[in-house]
Length: 219
Image (cartoon, rainbow, N blue to C red):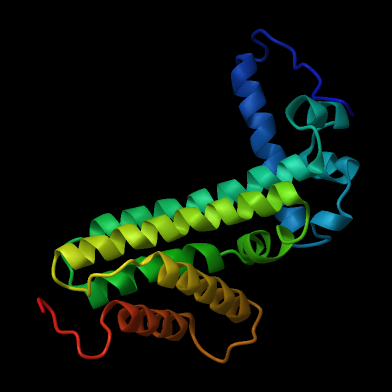
């Protein structure tokens, strides 16, 4: 398929063309979350199967997307956007808390959102891996966004005298890898711990990075 088929324009059934397009796109993404995130997985899903699960036609698929990879790319971004919204809300709600409690609230928000639906875990940590150079670039770019968010919060902690001043980009990058690895393994049942225990461990690791031995608040 060289490109997307042009969708019909004009009002139909009381909805504008833009509203109908948004609804079709949502239905395809909802179906993809189920098929890619559960059974049979992205690599075993066909356009016909996805269209059937969405209750739409293959023609309508090609009005919205060029390939199944485009659907996976959009779904990966959506899942990350949901998690980011949860984190941003937690940052705002925990703004007045001390650093340990603030970090715990933020990571509980992230972990709760990502692991609350096993399909999101699979999209974020499994299905996106090794698909294509394009999706690998997207995955790394999205991870860099999480690193930026963590560095920003570390900078705020430094400004408040709660953390040691340093360049946090390298440790933040390493720490994000630990977060993703632990949450994936916990979701897969490979970690004998509750989610709260996993989050508590992540918070301890983060505080060790931000408050190294010998450093004192305000020091």
